[in-house]
Every structure is written in structure tokens, then in C-alpha cells.
Length: 347
Image 1 (spheres, rainbow, N blue to C red):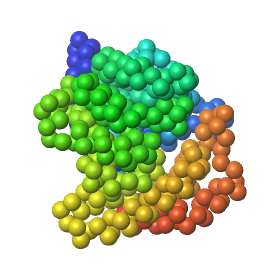
Image 2: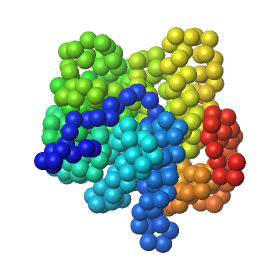
Image 3: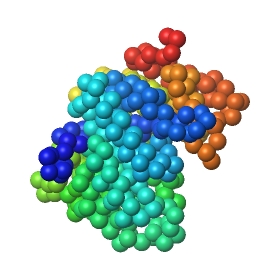
Image 4: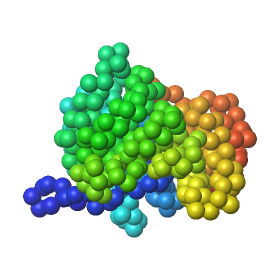
């Protein structure tokens, strides 16, 4: 984020646009578990070349295993790498979820200072027994952090990582209407009906007029959290997806998004979009079963870097890794990625 001479942040200069974004893994050195910055930078640039935007320190990035300082280092490294490679126009999203509202706000400020353009925040699941049924508390959480953050905020709705806390479409829509510094939502709940209901309000042309954003470069966008429904969300006026699968097959994911958009004007492309959607959906489903360690294994296999998660997360077992690589859903995905322009080590 550019900084004026008085130390204050300028308005967002990198608009948040519909498309495909990837939660970038954090890579670690084998023995020390210190950050492996060269591998991280390589991944950020490889995805940018494919047209995929970065989300740093999210679930895939093992944010819960990172210190404040490490998050700051990753954001700065990504910004510098992107700028040096000619991608100074590419925005950076940064995960700022924490245990308390107070710390989340602190992380938003630190992310902005490091160079992030947007933040994405999840409600902590530690006290989910209290929070899950308390709409007022959940609404106040995102209302407060969006009001105090120097950069626009996205809501991260992921019940699997927040103790089962699952925001419904009414609450998300209320937040979008009443909090002008909210720039969107990532639905890793996988609920297509929820996406459709939210888009019915926020994707209507009248929404921008009735509920203008604090920054016009940061509209309220609705992203899926899985590759399963990129095509169907296009017809609900959704805005793409933020998906771990894009780490493994970025060109294929972007191709599906682009062809899905084209089908709105040329229905003859629909069969091809459906074919691509099937390959990505099956691949996403199969790889997701192996979590972060499976994705890192595939990155190592295809691109020469990956490594293991930080302890206590275990690496993928050898037999499980071999089965993952041999799985027809993964092989179909790898084939599609190569056909779509992807380059692998040794290819």
C-alpha cells in the first residue's frame, strides 16, 4: 500500500476485481521451520503469470501458525516480488483473523502497513459455543473491524475453521448494506443457495447506488471458496472464487472462470465450460481430502517446492501421497493444467 509523507495510507489503488484468487501456502525450511521466502515468492509470481491473485496468511497459508512479524514479512515479500516482476497492479489480500476483535484490528493495520490492499477476516472458533448463536456479537465483530481497518475487509465464512460458526445470507447481506468498508465475502461453506441470495442484493446495479462503498475501487464481491460452482455462480452474478486448487492448477481455474463468463453471451461455449467445471470440481474434492499437506505435496511434485506444514500438522503419508498422485481426478486436472498453459518441472 503506498504511503504518503505523513505516514498515512492513500486510498486503494489496486481495484478488487472478479476472478480467481488463491490462498498462498506459507513455505518453511525443513529443519528450522523458518519461512522459505524464495519458494513463497516463486509461488506468488507463478500464479500472477497465470492471472491468479494472491491471498496471504489464510487457512492454506497456516495463518494460525504465523506470528505477526511473519505475516508482515510475507506481505512485504509478496508486494516486492510482484512489483519487481511487473505486477504492481495486482492487489494483495491478507488474512487478519485472530482470537479477539482487538487483535484482528491490529493485524489489519499491520497488513496495510506491510503493503496489503485488502484484508479478509474470520471469526475465531475458540468461543464458538457462545458466538455461533449470537447474531448481534457476530455482526458487531465485522462492523467494528471494517470501521477501524485502514483497508477494505472481506468476510471469511468458513465453518470448518471457526468451530462451526456459519453466517447466513441475511446477516451477510445486512453487513454489506450497513458497513461501507466491507468489500466482499468468501463462502467456504460451499452453500450455493447462500451465494445466490447474497448476490441477488449486492450484485444488483441499484446496490452500488444505495450503498456506496467507502472506496469505489472496493465493491462488495461474492466469492466461492471451492472450485465446485464457478460456472453456476456466474449465472447467479457471483464474482469468481478464492480456492486452494488454484495453487496447483492456476491456468485451468482461470480458463474455467473466463469461459464461464463468455457463456453469458455465447451459449455454444456452455458444454466446454461444463466439461472444465467437472474436471476442476472432481480435482478439488479429491485434493481437499488431503488438506494442506496434500496441496504442498502436489506443488513439490509439479513445481519443485512445497515441503511440509508447520508442526503439529503432519506431512502427507507416503502411501497417501502416491494414491493422490495416481488418482484419475488429479491426473485429469494435471492434464488440463498443461493444456491450459501450465508448465511443470521437467516438462
